[in-house]
Image 1 (cartoon, rainbow over the protein chains, first blue to last red):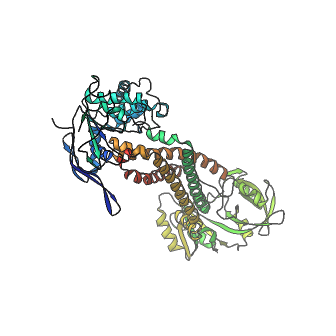
Image 2: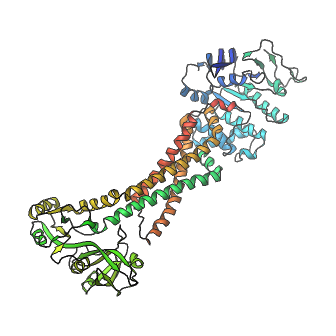
Length: 247
Length: 374
C-alpha cells in the first residue's frame, strides 16, 4: 500500500549569514494510513523541521516528499495551500485557535476554506464538536475554555477538513496528564479507527504508549540506536494500548 | 466566512477608536477643505452665475469681474442692434467705500443694475423687494454682513462713496469671495457711489434670443461693437474663478490642505491597520498553514479596512454636516454638494484599502511554518 507520507533523502539547510545550518540530513521515512507515529528527540534535533516539511509549510533543500502519492517538492509555492487543505490537518501545542471566534466558528473556518456552504457547515460543526465531547460549547470563546477543551476544538477543526494526514506538534505539552491522555486517545482513535496517518512531535514520555512507532531524531537524522524510555506498565502488555516499536 | 474581520476589528476597542478617529479626522479635514474650495469657487463667480445673461461684454483685457474697466454707454445700443440679441443691459460692479455710523469705513462692491430688467437682480431676498430699489438712494445687501457694515435693519441710512444710501432689504447667503460685501442698487446710484461718469458702464449683459446660437451672436457682437471683449457667462465665470483660486494661490492652499487631510488619514489608518494585523499575525500564519490561499487572508484584512472606512465615513460625515451647517452663519461658506459627499465615500474607501495594502504586503511574507515556532 502506498504510504500517506513518503520522505526520501531529505535535507534542509537554513541560511544563516554566509554559512548555512544543516537541520535535516538525508532523512528517509514512510508514514502509513492508520498509523500513529511519534517523532522524538532533543530540542534543535530537526523534528519540527521534519514535521513542517511533511506538512508542506516549509520547503526542503533537497530530497523527495510525497503526500498521498504526489511529489510536492516540485510544486510551486502557490500550489501548496490547496495540497495542505486537501490532505493535511494540523494540531498545535498552543492550540492556535482564533481568539475572537467562538469554538463553532473556529471549526467553521476550516469548512469555509474547503468551500462548504454555510448551511451545511453549521450542521457539520455541530457534529464535529459533539464528536470531540464539546456539546453545548459551540458558542464559547477560546478564552472561556480549558486547555483540554481548546485542544478538542483544534482537533475538531483539523478533522473538519477531512484530512488523510494529521500532524501534531506537542499536542499534550500544555495539558495536565488526564486531559493529555484524553487527547491522545482521540489521536489514537483517528489513526486506528478512522485510518488517518498521524504524526506527533512530542517530548512527553507519558504518551509514548499510544505510538505504533517512535522515531528518534538526533542532529537532523534518524537515530540508528534510539533509546526511548517508556514508563513501566504502559507497554504493549496492556491489551488496551497499541504496541510500541522502537526504530 | 466566519466573521473574523469584524471580530478582529472590534476585539481591541481602543485601537478601533484610534482607527476611527484617524478616518473621521481625515474625512472632516478633506470635506472642510474641499467644501471651502467649492464655497470660494461659488463666491468668486456668484454675480456672474446668477446674472441670467448669456454673454458679458467687457473692455479689452479684463481678467475678472472685479477688474472691470469703464467704457462708453453707447456700445449698449450697438449691442442691442445685433441680430439675435433679445435683451442687453448695462451694469456696474465696482469697489467703493462704506461709512459706518461709528465713523469706520469698509470696502464694499457696488452692483448697479436695471430694476425693471431680469438681468443681474439680487436673489434670495429675506426682506424687502427688488422693486424697492426704485426708491431714492435704496440699497440691498446680505444679512451676513450686517455686523461688518454696522447695519441693524431696514430703513437705516448710511454713506457710500460720499452719497446717501438707505437699506431697503436683505438677501441671505450672497457671499463675496473678498472681504467686501456686495451692495445692490440702481445703475444710476452705482454711478454716483463709484464716481463713474454718467455716460459710462463697466459691463453690458446680453440675453440671446431663443433659438439663436450663443457663439454666433457673440461673433456678431465682436464684429459690430469695437474695442470690447465678449465672453459667454461660463467663460467669464471660469476666468474669474481661475483668477481668484489659482492666480492668487488661495485655491491651491485649500487644495493642498485637502491633500494633506488625505495623507494624514492614510498614515493613521495604515498605522492602525498594520498594528492590528501584527497583533493577529500568528492567526494569519495559522490560516495559511491550514491551507488558506493568500487571497483569503487579504479578504480578511480588506474587510477590516472596508468596515473601518464605512464607519469612519458615516461618523466623519455627521461631524462634517455640523461644520458645514455652522459655516453658513460665517463669512466663508463650506459647501458640501451631493456629488462631493458621495465622492468622499469612495475617497475614504480607497484611502483605507490603500492603507491596508501595507499590511497585506506583510502578510504575503508570512511563512506558515511560523505556527510551529513557540
